[in-house]
Every structure is written in C-alpha cells, then in structure tokens.
Image 1 (cartoon, rainbow, N blue to C red):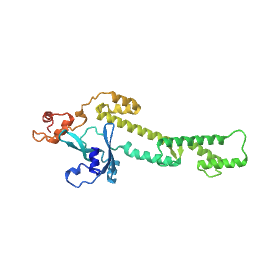
Image 2 (image 1 turned 180 degrees about the vertical axis):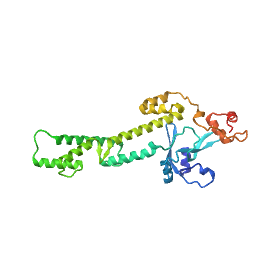
Image 3 (image 1 turned 135 degrees about the horizontal axis):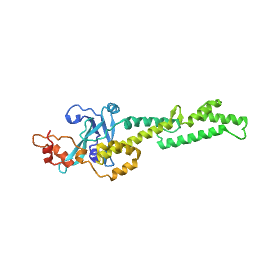
Length: 301
C-alpha cells in the first residue's frame, strides 16, 4: 500500500464525508504525507487545512473513514484511495482522532514546556527530560544561595558582601542592592516551584496526569479493537490501565479474544438488492468471515 502511494507520486486526499467518490465539489480537509505500520495498525501523518483543524479542535468531526482498493483475485487490500472526515464511521469502537487530551491538551503541553524551557535558558527544542534536569539544578542552586544568605561563622569583608549581593540579585532577576526581604521572598517563591507566577511543579504534575490518562485511553481502545475486552468492561479497563499500565498491558497480551470479529467491526445491517448480495458487500463480508448465505438470511434491511 505504501509502495502504491509512492508510485502515484501524489499525497492521498482526506475529504469530507467521501465527497471525492460522489462526483461533486470535494474540498480537501487534509493530505496524507506519510504512512507507517505501528503495533499492527496503519498510522498516517496528515497535514490538515486550517478549516479542518478548526473542525477537529471544536470536535465537530471526530472520525476517519478509509476507502481501500481491493484486488479481486485474492481480496487483498493493495491501495488507499482516500480518507474522509466523518461522524458516522462504519467500524464499531473506532477511536476518535481527536479529544481533549490529545489535540488541545497536547498543544497546551507543548506551549507550557516551551515557556519553562525559555525561563531556564534552554532552546525551544529542549526535551522534557532536559527541562526537568535544568529545573532541578536551578532549585538546587537556589537552595545553596539561601543557605549562603542565612550564613554563619565569620562575616566576609564589606566589599565581598556587596559583590555577593550583586550576584544573588542577578540570579534572582532582582536589581542590585535589593532589600533582604525581597531576596528572601524571591528565594521562597522559587523553592515552592514558582517561576514568574507559574507553579511549574504543579503544571508538570498535571501534564503527566494528562499523558497517563491519554495512554490509558489508547490502551483500552486497542484492547476493545482486538476483542480482548467487551464494551461493558471499558470503565474497569480504563481504571486498571491508569493505575497499572504495565499490568494492564500484560493482561491484554495474555487474554484470549472474547469478542467475535463480526462484533468488533462491521455494520448492523448489510444491504441487499432483492435477494442478491452486491459485490462490494461480499468482499467486506468475506474479510469478516461471513458467508453469503448468512448475509441473505440475516442481512436484509
């Protein structure tokens, strides 16, 4: 499939509600720039238009619906024709492509981390580990300065006092000769994790919680799609995956498939033309392990 797209030499279009297939004006919502296989799933890097990005941000569209080219000789998927933004996907339990923790929360996370990196004198491309390391060093330096300010033992010469005070004030972002109370207040503020009015420690804790909830949701969604848990177990699974990610991953790996594939993916009814089954329906049913006889018997609308 990836080779077929590369051979075409054009980006795969993402439209709205499969308008590309209807012979009408079909403005693009985005373009697929790259396809990759991860954990048994095909993932796409999509460049969204401004309008589509706004729809996703406002949760006006939440799902993707693919159009697959299938080879008739062996029913093998050989190409990706297009994708469509929709709110009525044919596949049950399909995860949404945007939610508060992945789209909006991800953007907020990046903005806050950039601000913290800037305050610490790091570049915007600094990783979270680098930011945490720099923050720890800064707090250690502040503690050392506080201990030095508290002092003890022999008092330095007057000139040394002035130089030390200038250095402390410069590090704390205060004017040289600032009052002792101002210096102490700034040190206590930094000790509490506050930088320019932002409690970075609490912000990082909140962001880590958001990331943990997002990872738990992704793990539960994958378990549902794999048939390892039922929809009725979703709330329990979400709590388990959040409290013990490794334990939940081990459970999913060892658990048997308890939900039939016909219940994991597929529509509630299958269209018939009289008593005949159309070719497209047969192709879909064959991939789902459903016979033509079952379709004729149970699939009438």
